[in-house]
Image (cartoon, rainbow, N blue to C red; front, side):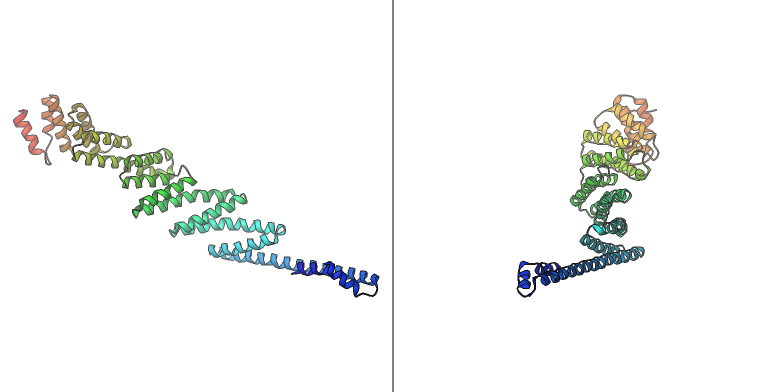
Length: 351
């Protein structure tokens, strides 16, 4: 409005009007000079007043945000500071220092808001807040806040993905894990989530690929030791369970391949070695059966009677009657007791 008024006052039409209606040209020039100086002073005063009011408004919003932040009302503090920054932007250069101070507070409060919402399992709100924290912190060279936000963003994406996986929203879960990996290509949590999701989808090779990433990236790191252990167990049991299913439909060679993959992750499962002995026996690979059975018998928790029955069959197939008899005699419980007795008495004529 001030600009419009001044432009009107200093227009050629105004000067012509004033000149026509002034008797003495010298008086007209003098009066015009005084009026112009007065108006300029008035304009400067109005601008200064407006500037002061705007600065005060921004300062008041800044202080309001401080109180809200102190009360842990992070959402309210963020709103107040966003308004203050908007005012600072209108003012321009003279408000840059105040704006920088607000931004420093705003970035960290966005971070606190993100963590708070994460704890409430409001993952999308948390992620948005942390993205804002990272952006603002990066603009003002607040490396600490930017780094902290960068760590949590993929972590929260991964947690969201696991939640979706638990609800059997597998495709969406995989998409979310990929989002996590965009922020951190070495995110152990994201690879763990992908492994568990592919396992649920019975995509064993893809699951193993993801679990291998967890194991490799987490090696020697205490912070992810549980994820590494869980991935190792999950991969081993996944292949073992699939092998057991293949054995039921007489796919013995496939089972052997799967069991060898299971052993890559752990050689402490007696059941893996027992199944390997069973599968190799069906394939008439006696030495492989004997090796697997003996390894099974050396482990705690083994079903010794079941393993010894397979061991006896392998020795018998190989033509080692004495060893077969010794193995069959150790079958003392379970469903194979009568079959072992028959081999001892009727077939091998064991002493």
